[in-house]
Image 1: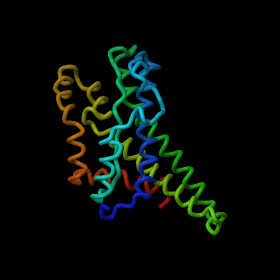
Image 2: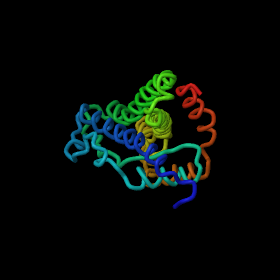
Image 3: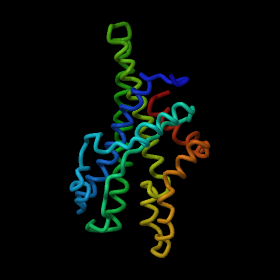
Image 4: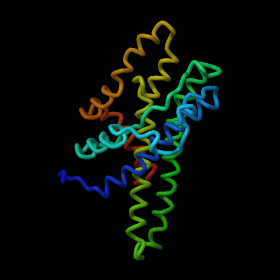
Length: 220
């Protein structure tokens, strides 16, 4: 067995991660569909079924590597939902809405999870000595991880590196003559992000923004 690997803890992490990345990708596809592009629907990706969105590396291997390496945050991703932005009724505003949809959804999930965490925590005197206490503790961890994962997914996706959502937003906002040059980064985007994570190059973002926001939502 791998050192410092707790399979139960990993399952508790994977559940909110799968929900977060599935909701993120579904939101992209739904926004595109409502704004005129049916590509995701035609490909069978306009679905809340996690199996249709999972990526073995991004949904399982990367979170495991980050957990075992002691990384200060957990991060993962799913297969991007296909979107043909040229089909959108308004290319610029439509692209901004589609690119932002996943991030907005993750922020909403983080807030809902934080509310559930606080409600369950405030009721702790009622269940802490009952037979259901172990189950309640698991739910507390699930909601706490959900807050962390959804916030990390939302904020990291706003980093202006293509093909992240922030990169897509940045591309649309750049002057036309710079957009094509910026898109050339896209094939290396995820590799750049993973290297930034594994080399702790994003410590400032984590220390001064993500961690305080997580602690504030969880009341710790």
